Length: 515
Image (tube, rainbow, N blue to C red):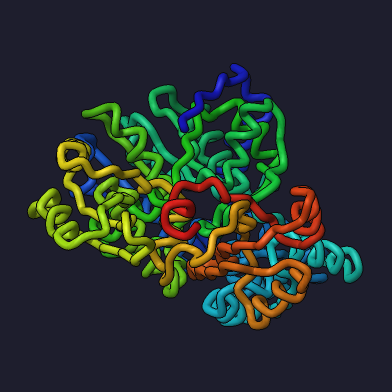
């Protein structure tokens, strides 16, 4: 999705940031990062593509800028009392680094689900860490309460003028070097980086447009633009944890409405493909949020050519456990792997006939399980060079009288089905009682036991698949036998639990392979 922003035409909210950015103290700890020409991407996209390398900062993220600028501008009394913040990663490291340099007492509240590598990184700077809650919101509430109880200064991750100004130095650095860029793409979580960069760019030159980029499952800015006011998302995806924010910052949104040209949303698969692109051009493994701006750039560039485009490579604090998932999904994100469900006759020679359709196309996976004596569904992954080659394969399937469904963008297929062993239910009643749901629960010791205890024993679980993506939360697919007279009874039970369930009973992949 791509949304254009109708700018207010004034700089009432953003005017003050020119001075704040110019006077920012970030270079006590941060470096003026280089801009890299991305040769592979430029050739592939038929545009000149550049990367602003914030992944090269001392903490491998731009967050070092805003955190230090905010803390260094506290009064001596505020610094003496100490600071506190809540964060699951890069902001925590930025605050810890600033406090070490300024010799300020520091306490950081991190969710229990925070990967150990990030907890260790914060402790390495000498800050105290309190692990609390299953998510950022719970950790943040605890931090705010402690700030009040202990008279500590709470350091906002993005919604603060000094934080915005610190991040805005990224934009100043870019335009000090190159004023001929056509578009700068900026990742969006709470909006601090986008507000800072756009405040500087919009008021110092007219040529360069600024676009924010969000992940589809945490697009709080896009929703705010649609509603023309800040809105709180009911659910926030956590794969790109660095931008997993449920509501855009107030100060940030005021600036964005005046200075930003638009916002682009991308899928998780497109994000994974951008991680691969950054690696191929820089040999740096970006975290998902760090490659977000590039994913938006690629989407924008697909309809233009011969433009000069720059994306902020904003961070490289990737969880090693997440790499397998990123690699797996990058091919889908590049639109080079297709996932098909193909119906074949259950008789000798069917596999051979199907394989002849594919010819020399590379098969990435082939999943089959006997279902009945008449027909079977085969789940096939196929590597394709482009859409045209995929159209040819589909035409061959039609000519060979194979019925098929394209499951490439089917969430159940990608997150669960292709990793499951099993098949259809062996017994199907006249009124099949199984209903399918997906949900998430936190990745921590005892999480599965806690989930099952909360679920209780009234309802029978007929299918269960757990998928850990190396994030703070894991995807779960659960089948539940519902023999109650009222459909609302099960839904009422699920709503009473502390999990968010989405029904997938009518999902094509489920009906063809598991039901």
